[in-house]
Amino acid sequence: MCDYSLHAVATRPAEVGETIVTTTFRGTSTRGFASEADMSVAVCLLPGTELAFADNVRYDNRWIWTRTINSRVGKFGKVDPHIPDRHHDAIEFPDGKYVLVTQLVEGQRATVLQLPVTQPLGEREHKPQVVADSRTTSPRLPIG
Image 1 (cartoon, rainbow, N blue to C red):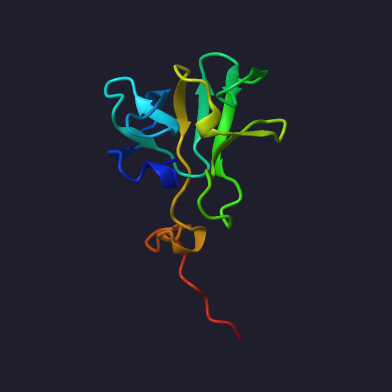
Image 2: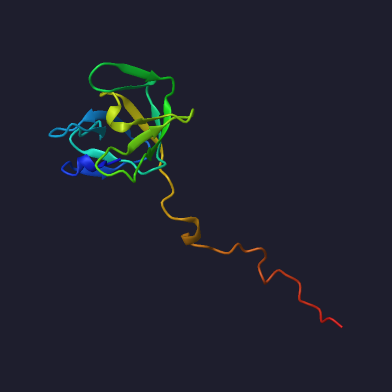
């Protein structure tokens, strides 16, 4: 998370194990996640970040209704990134449904369970596995 409309808000990356809270940031109409310790700083999530909410997740459209998702776990992601000037940050739930972060009811607490791997598999440092120490292997016998 740190959607396009939060460009004027201080941000920092999420940390595994921390509790974050849904809030509306001062000077914006955008909701997002903040640390319990400092509600003025947006906590940014990477796509794939897994969250566990304290209660079933509630969301609204800010005017008429509030709804509840019967789930306490979700994964952060982006929806419709090809459409400019729109909120893209969303939480996807195990049933495949998603809710925009900006629609989450304020005051909900979630724990950051796991951050995604940010380095592609092909770029990870490869360390060959040692199968046998050359000092303990038997000498090769000549063939022939």
